[in-house]
Image: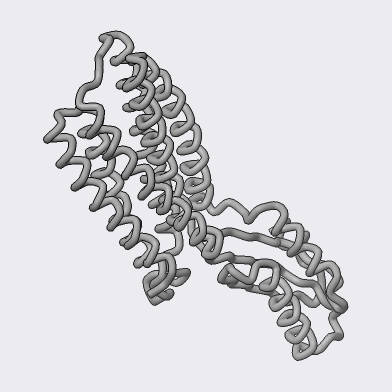
Length: 294
């Protein structure tokens, strides 16, 4: 079992525990805020289960139908999860405004504080674990899952802080003020996640830093006179590179192939964590202008 799949299973199990605990305490205490948090954890569970499906699908090898693999399902998952996070942010913003307008007060503070403290500890540990896995695997699904639970961590922390303040001061409006700030942060973070997923779906090129390193590898390789039509894209952890290398007309195919293999191997060392697919076309002369005219 891969590290990505283990991470999605762990996040799903944590979500199950939080849903059960929050529902029990919310029903017993009558706390609307805890029940709302239980619903949010239920949404987390649904997202984590979808991410488990996405990771399992993305890990399947290329076949006759999906010649380039299923890596882009991670981008689809990121867009969906980013949209869910955005909706959650707007809902929190709405609830915060509603509390300010209606001057709503909280009840059963002890039970509410206890369950939110438990939720904060469990979510914090999960976020740390998911961030660790995301750094190792560079998986967009795990990154989006980490962001999702990070927003929950901020929400739970804000709820806990506001509950403690209200418990000692009866300053009820602090709950709504913190809610508005968190909602704005959640919406902003989700926009970046959606943007990254959409760019991947549209076959945006690799980061400019990586593209520059690819160019440096090609330009520094002895025997390569020039190159053109360099194209790159990404699908999950799969990096794709297409390029035409220009050699001299009298160079043997064997020698040109050897140099191309050297270029390919050097490109793959730029990011050893990625799965590279490098397609190199061998040209005996620069035919880029000729083909453009056609």
